[in-house]
Amino acid sequence: MKKKTGVGIAAVAVLTVILGVLYVFTPLQNALHIGFIENLIGRYAFSLDASDLGDPLPNVKSNLNRYGGRFSENPTINETHNPYVFIDYIQLMECTGGNPGRDLFADPLNPDVTDDYDFSALIASCRGILKTGAKPLLKLGNVPEKLSRNILEAYETDGIFDVNVYPPDDYGQYYAYIRAVVEGLVEAFGLAEVQSWRFGVLTEFENADWFHAPGRDPAESLAAYCKLYDYTAQALIDVLGPDVCVGAHAMAVSEGLWDECDFIRHCANGTNYATGKTGARLCYISASYYEIAPGEFGKNQEPLPHMINRLRAAAEAAGLTDLFYGVDEGRILVGTQAGRSSNELNSRTVGYTYQAGFDARLVKQAFDCGLNYFSSWEYCSEGDNHGLPTVAYYVAAHAARFEGARFVPTETVKKGLLYKADVNVSAGYNEETGTLHVMAYNYKNSLDYRSDASLGIRIRVPQFADGAVRVTAYRIDDNCNWFDEWCADREKAGITNDAFHWSPDDGTPLWADPEAQQTFRELCAGYGDEATLTPETFTAEVVNGELYLEVTLAPNTVVFYEING
Image (cartoon, rainbow, N blue to C red; front, side):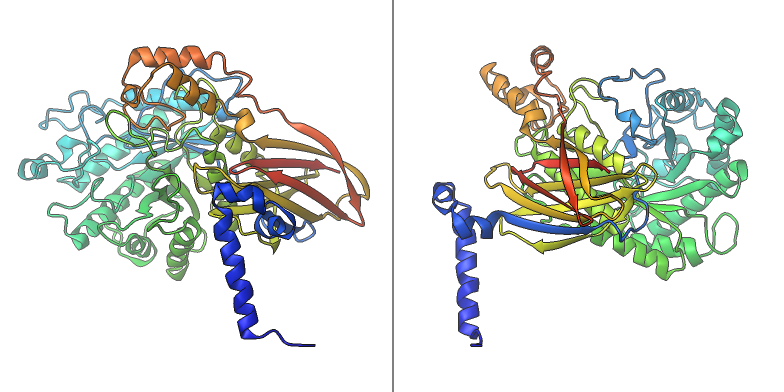
């Protein structure tokens, strides 16, 4: 047999690259949509083996975060599209203070009295969380201003989050405050109930905009946070017992004032500032994970799996082998359009179907790297999870169904060459229900949609007898997304970007114009059909213990299959 020469291989490679580049230009697509070129560009094949089962998968959509430390005492549940069905924890950021509006004192501006505690606002928030069926995840640690009064007299607060960024003047006094907070919660809800909650210490602890020592010296700021953590965790332990679930939220996705892994090493082997013993209780490490904007994923950013694996490697090297890992906030920071104030995204998601592909990619990465959860901000058009469901809601609701299913590894047999695309599959088999869950997506890192992906998915399923099986498919695409209709209608209505405070790309808009907001609500009342996800049920054949699925996905389309033998 004649060997391929280096020149021949190079020529094939160059031709492949040229065809891939040509394919991204719309005028040439129809000409290239033929024969082997179409197969080369847009054809993917995957192999799954459900006889090779891994660990049970988590509900990666189990957490919801709330900025400002408060939650409605009497939440109205969206019965039609209820995210609380799959949300296990609601995170209250900066819930123990940091400014007079959130400090848990009767008179937060009087520095001469430091035990005039008033926990009613926090208790009401926790009561509301419990009414949803979720548990609180309370972010403690933001120091009330009057407990840092001496530092604040010397240094003007410089945080951008309207929060005291400094340590307490007296850590013993701060410990007494946190202990009183926890005792107040136990009095209101009972010891066993509060023991079932989760706790954290600060948000993005190495982010100087949230916390640092006076002068911003990295070493001093690290020591100050470790001391704050030790005293907070000890107050929890002294009230709730040694098994309390407490952890910490690092920024991690970008460089902070100091290395977050130094805190992990402190908890493993450092001297505890509160007890003088070695180490501090640490149950989890969470992080923030933000992409910059649609079309800019991975630009100067550490990929999610790398970030989680880096934190895990530091913990395990220090001897902490039983931590769990989460993302406490993140997704997409800014939109492509700016509102009156900025281009930030209120819900950190866009309303476009792009978000479905983006989220499915994160779910895949979470499963592959062992992430326990990825917290979200909002799921519906009106905020507080009211109004129309977004595509982000549909992806979350179906990703949550993987919980308890055992991980099924995916092998990529053939990878197409779609421009700026990530096409992939995740799967899990639930032994209790006998259900195989499969998620496939065509994530196109662009709002300029172009190329479809054709997927062939071969699955070895020895759990199913040969013959027909029932398959239910949930296809999340433009057909269940109202946002494209809204974009067209707002243009007709003359609603400009100035009607929004932040980016109009957001599926949960932050309004600057009440009249435009009312128009939005009136239009949304007619989008019921456009916001409805209708499943498709069909039968497929298992032959010799194997099942084959074939699907074509438009850009940023996600499909969830539930297969019952």
